[in-house]
Length: 249
Ligand SMILES: Nc1ncnc2c1ncn2[C@@H]1O[C@H](COP(=O)(O)OP(=O)(O)OP(=O)(O)O)[C@@H](O)[C@H]1O
Ligand SMILES: [Mg+2]
Image (cartoon, rainbow, N blue to C red):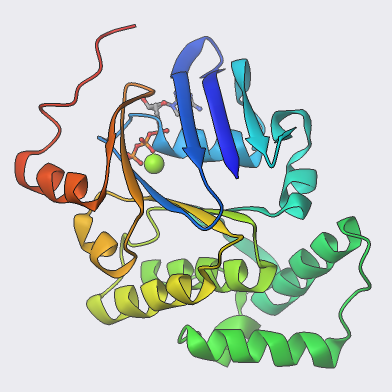
């Protein structure tokens, strides 16, 4: 279970998160919606431990442990995973090498043995096939020259390989064609388990037809202004955010 308690955070002197409280139970898929600039990506970065954000108050408890006190790689080892809105390009490192390093780093942190190359190849091939990621992509430099949709598929492949406990998908649907959206959503659905939870950030209710959320939360000006079920996403699609704007802090 992930419990966010009164989380406030800033970048430099700019306050971005203004007291977020949210509980995501094991097995739950929570969707976060909200206008551009409301703090959705910032929330995902603060949970995953990206540098540059100052937490000024609050806690993020993963099964009772305050992960804000841990480094990003320690959080990853605990099973926190973030699929980036804008995946990073790393020239000079092949996708395959990156995936192997990511899996082995996590295994090391967990005190598990490194995967042998044949074991790794078998695992990665089977997961890649399911998500329609072709082998040729895996031999190319990470994300370099990948199309928007290819980058998003690769994020979901990483997620499948790292078997997270708490996965955040930041606009994983943006830039996907209709078939890719279905493939990616099926990939996510296949990973749904009673002991794994998801935070799905999206602008479009369409994704939530495929990945059906248990709860929907609306962020405005760094605060959750309303929460509901799947029907809330349908209402937002119809009416926009006009009924859910946070008062200035
Ligand atoms: N490094 C930074 N320096 C200054 N302001 C920043 C920085 N990073 C983010 N912000 C600001 O924080 C606010 C929240 O940004 P964030 O990326 O979290 O929004 P978002 O809800 O993910 O938006 P979108 O739907 O467009 O992805 C924005 O006003 C943004 O300009
Ligand atoms: Mg964002």
